[in-house]
Image (cartoon, rainbow, N blue to C red; front, side, top):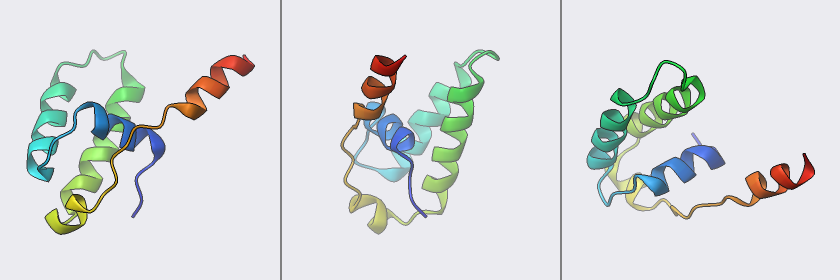
Length: 78
């Protein structure tokens, strides 16, 4: 199981040293989303689902560094 670039970026934004704390933080953020924020809701759901089946040991070994480079390239090409 691999995380997408967007999932990694989301985890970096709401980062935590603890997998359980990150799940809790993302779940709280999800409750604040409006019905129109479908993409962010889906991204949050997929990230939480992957975190829930991940072990704490594997989580602690993740390299959580944001990567916004693709977004910048996409914006420049539009």
